[in-house]
Image 1 (cartoon, helix red, strand yellow):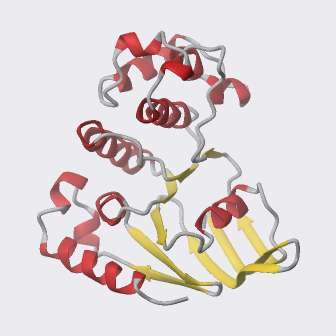
Image 2 (cartoon, helix red, strand yellow):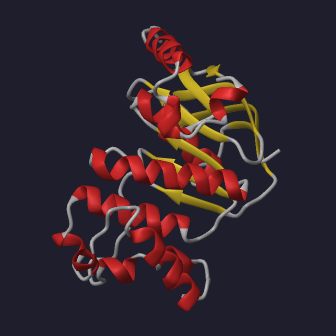
Length: 243
């Protein structure tokens, strides 16, 4: 067990109920995506798991507190270059930024389509997609046990995205890391995760579970399968559910 939610409820100011009696079990090594209509509470759920928010009721159990959380608004210090910002999360965790860390970052740069000249720029000079790539790199370098990502790919262009998804998938599989990410993009959910959760109401997380054979395929291999098409339409139909 990595995370378990038992009858979790949450209400802002004890008035606006977001969740009521929510239950969820996530095992170590799971790659979980969360999809749902805007305003259904996806980010709130991630904040609860991260410990940014506390539940109004129920219990959240975590077997490992080594968590890295990439929020929608990527944290980059304005007075640091992109390269210097790459190691910000490591520094905040007390992880030494040595030659090993720097070499690990350099090996990922090409896969993330981050050009050398971009590394010398300050955040105000970077595109939204480049900031997001730096944020992803920053998060992965922490080598956390659990990665929480809120819309991590929405500003990244398709050419860079394919290699990024493949790298992240291979990294998670090889290291048995756990990842939970929010997305509005059904393709991203199906190509990267082995569990898809659809938030449909304050009490319901509907799970779409692909077969083991499908989950063993890389993101590039999944898209041409009949199961991909079947799951895609199943998710679309469930997202039409009225809250």
